[in-house]
Length: 119
Image (cartoon, rainbow, N blue to C red; front, top):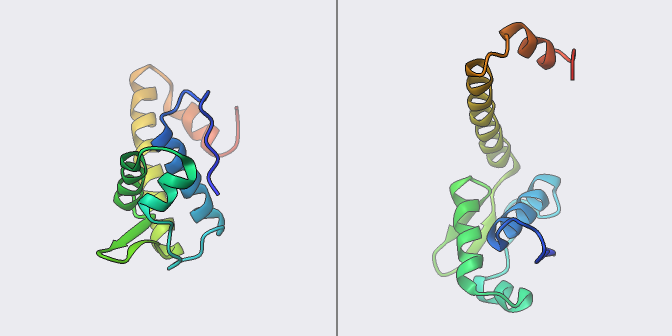
């Protein structure tokens, strides 16, 4: 079950997305398992269905779930989730490295951190 924190600075749809992402990665939701319908989850959480729809749409775009028209949303296979997550993290890593290099951080320092040196 997803827990929402209304005092959290993150939007509700991101909390839902992050909660499901965590469940999918940890195995709390198995590959092929059906997720609650948009209406069902909106009712359970007492929020607007559009919020759920946005979270599901982003999870699908990231490869964590897939939709079957008329049937609902389902958890993607772990291999799909892992490869999508790796690609996403590598893109974030590339962006962070580029920004750090631009800010004057030495490549040797970055390599040292990657190898487990300075933190």
